Length: 321
Image 1 (tube, rainbow, N blue to C red):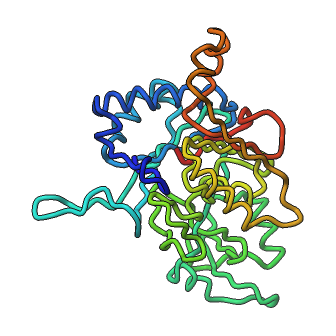
Image 2 (tube, helix red, strand yellow):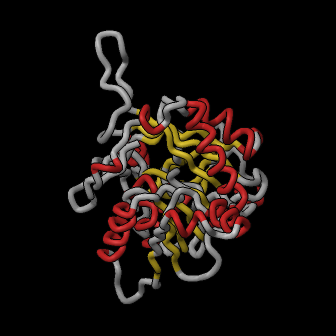
């Protein structure tokens, strides 16, 4: 754990988790249980981790809380920058990938919007013909179309039957091709540019969070980031017209997130609030026992930000954990 901006908050994994991986898993499991509780049936969770804990998190936390049947994918994010888990060595293979574990609340009803990559140069070359309207296309085999559909395309001049071809062929237009579907290897994100970089040690590229948010939510849905860090998820969710809620235990992290939001604010930006909670020992020590119980359960080790009013976080997605 490295928290940015305050030397007093910088602690190593070993110092923070004196009991080893089992203490870390116990700590995280309680928080994932709450994320699962407030997630809508249409929602999903994306939990980012590296090789130190990904197997433990999947088997001991996510499979147990969300259920094995609701496991969707393990996304492999190949980092081209930032904090590698290992520098390698004579007897060590360098590690430059992290896992993003993707689970759905309900495997039969979750939101999923297919994301695509632009066609590569080789695929573009296939569209080597141009019709009278200036649209690029190539002749593709027509194997699964019905006879009715074939007749319709023949009448439009968008299909043909060649004597030497096994199957009829039709015009496959470039402008109807949405691109190559995204698979589970994500290695197409560039370095974080100077206009995006804020100096946060574990900062993620905005393009990474944009893909996740677009894939698992629609405009107006709520994105929850319970470990907001440098605020990438919040900034991207705001830009994509999602409601959002961000939480972090570091006041400095909240201030950085607020600054990022201010930089992209315009006349059409919806209002948001920043809530910083501070408590003293005596206030908590002498609080009514039931009030204290409610308070301590409500704390996820964090400092909430709430956006666009409404109920907090009951609406949607948990992202960038």
